[in-house]
Image (cartoon, rainbow, N blue to C red; front, side):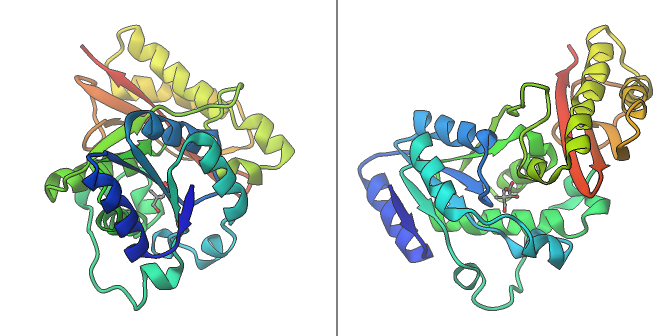
Length: 282
Ligand code: PAF
């Protein structure tokens, strides 16, 4: 498995594979890989002849410079994980390679990025969509794999690909959870012991909402309240938002009539966590 640092290098490597008739899969990451990433890589490796894992901590998607500075950078261990999970190559460009001069052209995601995390992380999804578009142009994958844990990010990318006729299939991959239900995230390692113990309550809350939906409840307010009640029992949780949204557009719904996500963001100490569950009304 090769580690390539330049756009020209990765382009050449995948073009050679494509000439031989292979499908190129891309798993975009910021490194600090965990079991959630491993499941994306393994899925791509099972479905594609070449799997590229990009590892790039993207400065333009961070709202706070400080968060960008302290984002974990664990390239050596990540490369080992990629090899173990079946990746064919790692694309690990520098900042200079991705942004040789200040960027003047951006992807503006529109309404799909305006709710949920949008108001709390201004410019975040614009930075995500822009870097993902750049990665798509560098790697030209036939398929790209994204975790459902970041449901709004997934919807932003799906909308961008559809709006701009990008020739890539977006493959959503189910959230991987710890045994106690906590969704895998590189942020989990920053939780203190008490916060880590409390964190699975996010999933407990979402399951309470899901139980209402599965029992036939269709009023979003009632569904939200079921989750809120569970979360209110944990004093360490500071809720940022909890909403029932259309699974495609990410717009809040009042009544559940199609596919929705119940999505939550909350702070535990100084760590912000997100999670969601999907439900489809029939
Ligand atoms: O989900 C992530 O790790 C990042 O937002 C992504 C998609 C790699 C873009 O930087």
